[in-house]
Amino acid sequence: MTDHELERRLRTALDHAAPNDLEGVLSRCETGKGTVIDMTNAVETKKKKRRWAPLAAAACLALVLVGGGGGYYYYSANNAVASLVSLDVNPSIQLEVNKNEKVLSATPMNDDGAEILDGMDLKGTQADVAMYAIIGSLLQHGYVDELANSILITVEDDDQVRGEKLQQELTAQADAALANAQVNGAVLAQTLQNSEELSQKAQEYGISTGKAALIQAIVEGSNNTKTFEDLVGLSINELNLLYTAQAPLEGQVSGNEPEGVIGGEDGYTFIVTEGPPIVVTGSASQSAYIGPEAAKEAALKHAGVSASDATFVEAEYDYDDGRMVYEVEFHVKGTEYDYEIDAQTGEVVKYKTEQNGANTGGSSANTSSFIGESAAKAAALSHAGVSESSTKYCNAWLEYDDGRAECYEVEFMAGNTRYEYKIALTSATVLESERESYGGSGSSGQSTGQSGSQTSGGSGTSSTDIGAEKAKSIALNHAGVSASQTSEMKVEQDWDDGVLEYEVEFKAGGVEYEYTIHGGTGQILKYESDRD
Image (cartoon, rainbow, N blue to C red):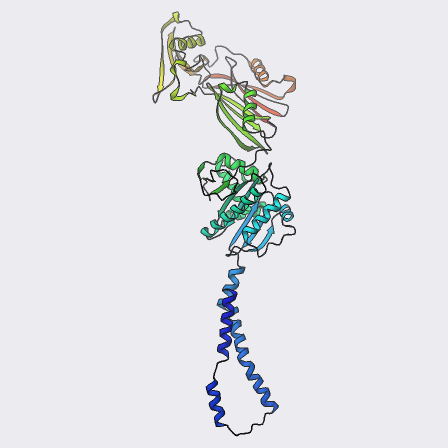
């Protein structure tokens, strides 16, 4: 009920409380014509009381109107909370908003939020005006700049349509405020409905429900390899980098972006998640970090590989062991490299390599680059230590999988032993080898599985054994450290699918190293480093 409507109803109530009965009064006066009436004080007092009776009745009726259904509705519409709006950067602020989008209260949720609201009285202002003022204060106090430019806006409302409308209005105001300040900002916006689980998380960690929802989306997007506890201390800018790195883009809506909005001509970006959709405008600042290209260069330098030889799979943000890192993955011929590079310093945090023998050219590989059957045979014979003249037969052919050349297969018989090899298409690399002996010692089959080492049957011993000291030396040399610099050195002999291996582990300079060394050839099959 508006003020004007309430005034009209009160005026009507007063009119009805004092009716216009002129004819009745005149007729009653006619019968008493000529009679002298003694006007005593008692009569005057009685008349005074009767004169105020209609007014009292009208006042009571007004109270009924104000305190009853109509008045209660008027009061409720203007003072009941319809939406909760939270704004997070590092400062966190919560606004209570009524159905007319007017601010009922503005509450800081941490000390930084109190600093932003200091001296501001937002009660009674429109929510979009309040948003503009808060963004201005964030900029003035240096909480949003080129190093950390991300803002999270969350609207909680049981009415989804109303909530989304308010979210869009507030996002537009935030974008406009950033544009006017010439700051390349990034805004994440979401609309939530009541979630007891998120509310409990928010209360437990002392954060807003909106930030809790963003963290939960990242945890779910990582297939739960990250935990809520790991991420709760990160800023909104850091969470934005992680979220956009792992979330697939659903699409971008062109032409609907408000004028002056920073975020590019492609408009709003909608990111698919299991929970409520998060709308992203602009890009999170990377100015505090070395950048993906520098991370790639650091990984290539450490691996001793040139960029022209590498096929990159990814170079994306991640968070591990309390720091922001780049996950860098690339392939060089048959070897896969995985690196974690410190996003601020460029330091190699972790790395591992694994031979997989995959043909990175896929089905489009040019067969002119293949080594040919003769070279494949030569590689297999050399690895086995057998001359072709001593074999009973030696055959080689291209092996296909789903119409795609996968490798060369080589098979030959020498003495009482049959050999089978898989050789890489574009190099003489032995991907896999197997031998089976027949005769007095019984038959046996041994497979090296990617290592390509020849092993003997039956006895379970390698035809050659480099020994534990040699394996340790190979690992130390690869890591670039001396034995005197290490601690907790451990070397163990192991067998994997009939292949003799040495597991070498040690620590040096705050880094833990783990190596798997082929016991016959000294080849490094796998290695990892992890900062202590």
